[in-house]
Length: 163
Image (cartoon, rainbow, N blue to C red; front, top):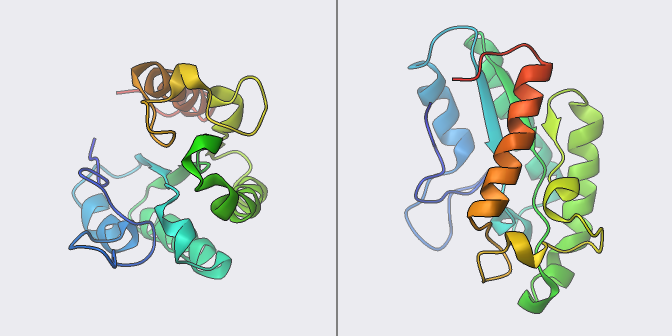
């Protein structure tokens, strides 16, 4: 397993704030090191939503799926997570997040983990405090565990090995 996002990355463009590469630029190189026939699970964050168009986000996902397929792998995706209202960032990014998540689920219907039912159980459109690391954006251990369980369900549903 390879975590391309550690210690952080953008989904589709080079980070304008620092020397952090995009996932698109890393996927092709990374999948060549993995066994044929595997899968790739991609969770995009909200960072891209402040400076990237819907078209760019969709192209990034399409490019990631194509890079994985070119190496005999399947790309699966996690929808962009909800955040808490107290961040002030939610209002700015929520419309694009909803559009992108809807497109992602429609385009890859059997290859998407929908994060909202997992980490927004009260369905108020926000990251539940029980899963919030304290900043309104990031998951705490319980949130990570809940999302990992949902991802494991997707892996099992597709008959992919867990491990």
